[in-house]
Amino acid sequence: MKFFVDTAEIDAIAELNDLGMVDGVTTNPSLILKSGRDILEVTKEICDLVDGPVSAEVVAMEADAMIAEGRKLAEIAENITVKLPLTWDGLKACKVLSGEGKMVNVTLCFSANQALLAAKAGATFISPFIGRLDDIHLDGLELIQDIRTIYDNYGFDTQILAASIRSVNHVQDCALIGADVMTAPPEVIKKLANHMLTDKGLDQFMKDWAKTGQNIL
Ligand code: E4P
Image (tube, rainbow, N blue to C red; front, side):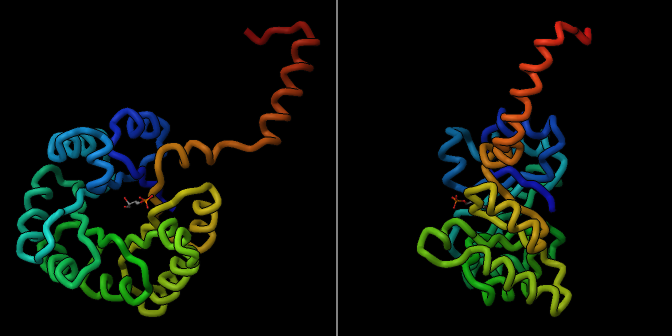
């Protein structure tokens, strides 16, 4: 499973990228707001830093304007993925931009039928939002499983990009289901390394090592 980092914070991306943990980046208007940066400037910096796909989201509501914004965003760098909302206009824009050879990420997906439409419109990635479904007492992981089944049934190439990931369990469950990609905030990716038995075991090893009186260097 590929790891995308869901942020527009350059330092956080750089830290994970140095460890080889970043296969791509996703941003959205809320994350651009949080960064306090100009969208074109910060997106260019992210694209220079990361080799993989970098999603930049359009903000127009109508297909023609989405296409114009998508083309402008795609000029930033070769690894730009144009992010479009899963609306009828977004699907129209997806069809046109993917037909031009641009990578497209269709976002704000909350049903398997929406994911089916995005695949038929030529999306490179579909972004089902797990956490926001869980927030309203629906099962976000069940949606990932349903989309996996449908895409496999018909051999769609569209990659499932599990989004709105809030916990380490979401990451593990997405990997078990077979999501192609997951995008998570840097904090969640860093928490994947944590285990209380690792901490406990290390503590004991350090106490015993101190008793040996030895040094390695
Ligand atoms: C995905 O591309 C979105 O940017 C993101 O995962 C949304 O997550 P949230 O529901 O935690 O805002």
